[in-house]
Image (cartoon, rainbow, N blue to C red; front, side, top):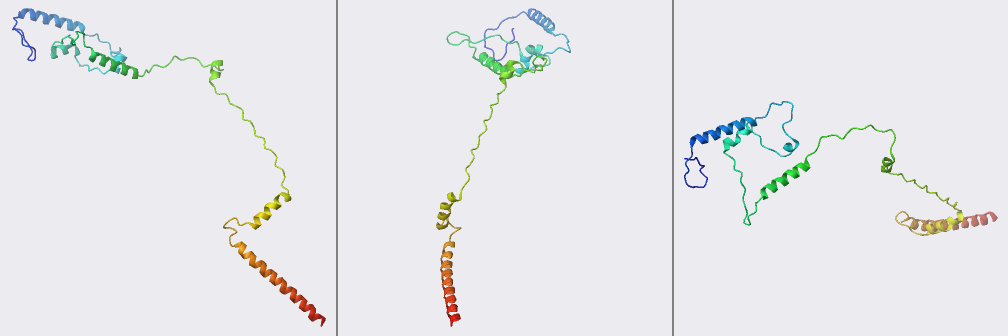
Length: 197
């Protein structure tokens, strides 16, 4: 009887020749031994693409098929009858995006640096624009006649808190000075009058 997995569709039982199955397994083992890679200690096993896309690699990966069972090479058809490769396309898009992100560590080819710039290199430099010096116009000397009207206005006007209160004090002072002058004048006249007598 042929061995079947538990989840496989139940069909009719099939009689199998055991000797034929054994010979097929022996042939498969011979093929697996041929797949064994040579020992190359200094050769890189992984390519750049393998580094970008993570691949799980077993210790004895060639025997994985024996452990997990024979892998079926099959695909599904959609309702129209076309092969549905959406999963494969999605995986390919992921591989492409990862490969774009991969950075190369290769350095550009070295070349000798020249002592002078080429005309192409000179055009890359920013040209400095000359600054135009501003010429100051000489100011005319200020005359006393020009300042006279400003001085008169400033003394008469009240400009704020600094002069607040000062103007009030000046007015009584002037009146007191006038009174003192009048008193002095009267004293002088009285003395003159007393001196005459």
